[in-house]
Length: 79
Image 1 (cartoon, rainbow, N blue to C red):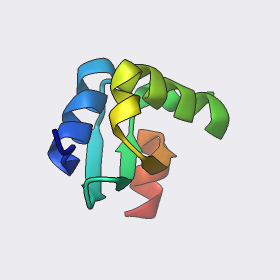
Image 2 (image 1 turned 45 degrees about the vertical axis):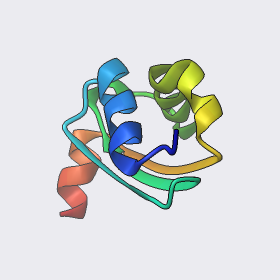
Image 3 (image 1 turned 60 degrees about the horizontal axis):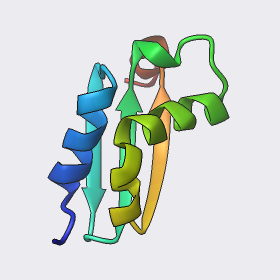
């Protein structure tokens, strides 16, 4: 089964409450912008770990995932 950006988005949403989530990719390499309150007070490594936990074993289906993780406050400042 080829993994789509929609699949990756669904995987993340199932395990992490997101205020904003955008995923692009070609079936092997994916880029995600993830905004979640769960990231508040955590460093980038901890934030990425939360995303990997949300994806779980399905990460084996994804060749590469680059992500930009932001808190809602950081996202608002960027807008």
